[in-house]
Length: 114
Image (tube, rainbow, N blue to C red):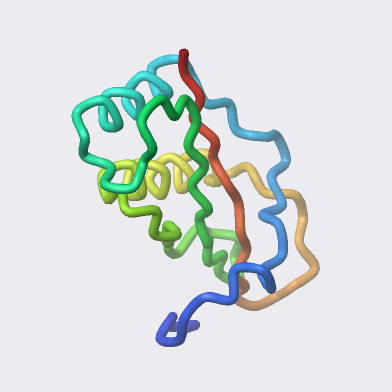
């Protein structure tokens, strides 16, 4: 089992091999907008209308999603929301892999609103 004990090398992670790219719905965007509007995101500049969250994903040898780890953006509710969304988007949505072992990948979700 690959346990994440060291800091994640975000630049060194391979892109997540989605078979079909995730679709962020209007409802998902609205949730993030509400989190920003209620000042739950401590470093989000006023007037910001977009937020991107990087998520590391551990895929096991059987192509199952073991864990998702959001990159800290000083907005815990959005970080955890993005990690949960990625877990859902990733299940049964991987391209065939040649690796027969666990491997870390990176993906990002961008939330945009008006």
